[in-house]
Amino acid sequence: MTNIKLKVKKDDEVIVLTGKNKGQKGKVVKSMPKENKVIVAGINIVKKHQKADAMGKKAGIVEIEKPINASNVALVDPKDGKATKVGYKTLEDGKKVRVSKRTGEVIA
Image (cartoon, rainbow, N blue to C red; front, side, top):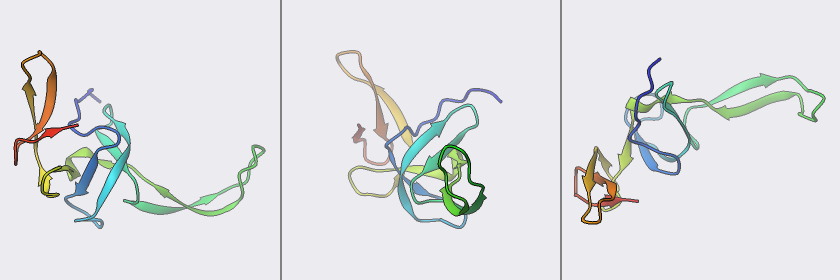
């Protein structure tokens, strides 16, 4: 796998574009650029059968968030709350920032 620069980062608010969770919003918990995937809080939850271990983990069925492809999520525009593409702009002081292509708003 090649190392791709993701336009969504940890703690970004994103909206799911395709799949069973289409239209749902969530916060990016983890970004995995090498795999081109992200884990979003409350999205793509699956049930997993888990064994008990010596570290104190309980046995049973647990729900975990699985990664989804980064191309299936879009950043939420900070101004109007809709999906937007991400662009980059250099400020006067030479700092490179992400901007919303939809409204031109700077993304923190």
